[in-house]
Image (cartoon, rainbow, N blue to C red; front, side):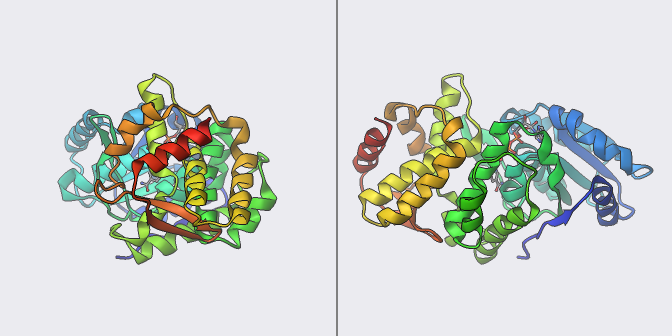
Length: 348
Ligand SMILES: NC(=O)c1ccc[n+]([C@@H]2O[C@H](COP(=O)([O-])OP(=O)(O)OC[C@H]3O[C@@H](n4cnc5c(N)ncnc54)[C@H](O)[C@@H]3O)[C@@H](O)[C@H]2O)c1
């Protein structure tokens, strides 16, 4: 499998050109959400000229669009438009839009080409890369989906300028995750760059993307190595779900940062990581995200969601844990009680 490597462009004009080149003479439908449709799409539309989409479909912004009902509406809309394999679905948006659009494109007519134009830091560094897509089902995140490569990913970092502080930092949590997995040179940058909102640095983003590309290339269908990319996610997803259940919300990446902090503690308890590296990772997380971390839910609120998590296996209890800076390993830590104890001590 050839993993799609994103193309970086410096201006909206260059983005529009790159899109035209990619599409050639093919027709396309543009999928976006109602916020991105208002904030980013007008910038791009200005340059599209004669190369405008056959239709623009806007879904509700955020995780809510990753739903079976929305897929049904989209499949039906594409049928009505007479879209075939010779056409393209272009997804402009964050990870929710690329996950939804990637899945709809993979399943409609057994697969039509899809192009991603990520507009959040999270989607630029993570969600648009590697081919995983999917929707939520019966309260379980990403319960239904496929792994299939987009035809192209076009990254214009300027879209990140309009993100809220929480959304911006949410994406940086995945960059910090890549820094823990890949180590230097990305880690050094993250230690230096700490917690200043500024224009998204393309070089930093490229280093982060490279970490993901290396891992996904080794394991395109997530049979082994790729699971280390889930560091922070098992606990992070459970925290996210607990918030949702209480009618609150937390940005995906912020929940991942919370998950990494807990997993760091677990790794320390298991004596798998040195105090020096654990301290250094905790400091970077604290410096970047300390001011936006909500309080941790009680164990009783996250436990039911941990059992649902597909990345944990009922006999062995496997979690990717940070072992050192530049090394994450899937560890069987044996007992739920241990995780519960570490969690309660940490939260307390
Ligand atoms: N497929 C993968 O490998 C993968 C990896 C990581 C995360 N994900 C998924 O990605 C999703 C989270 O992605 P996300 O954080 O990008 O969420 P999102 O797409 O829901 O975007 C968050 C919010 O930001 C708004 N937004 C997007 N771009 C904007 C811009 N440029 N300016 C202002 N507002 C903007 C959106 O409208 C939305 O309200 C989750 O569903 C997660 O499961 C997938």
